[in-house]
View 1 (cartoon, rainbow, N blue to C red):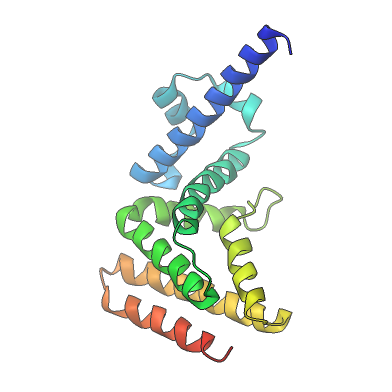
View 2 (cartoon, rainbow, N blue to C red):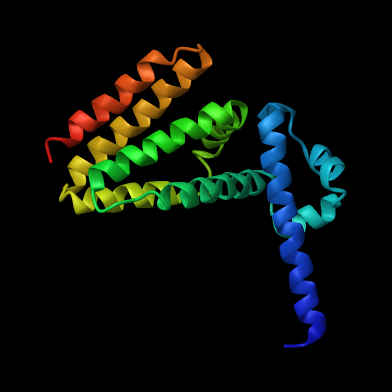
Length: 186
């Protein structure tokens, strides 16, 4: 490959990574409603034109940042996975909980971005759900049972967010216990 093309590709990838990191940084410190292209350009010194070379819209940028954050989370919990699908599911939930403890504003903004993107074509594919479904498949759950568990998992995540917002940590262990009890049926 031509050296100029290699250099251009590296610059593009570097700028893309910088934008995703900047998005994570901004979503960790500001409310989603305060985030704008100007705040991204101020933090990165990357022009709006260049941002649009990487992302077709602000929604695509948000989806990219969500994926970026979830890839980091996925890497962390995958290192802890074992041969026991039930324990792996618990590990995913516990790691998500720990992530929110450490990054409450970021977690709140990601949730808001999910809501914002839920009715659009920009809704991101999340590896965590693929991994969760893979573990449920190992348990032999049929599609209906998987859907029921995924709803329980999502409701537990929502309850967990509410408890975090109210600074109530006692219910969180109960949520993990409830999910674990449900899995004992399989």
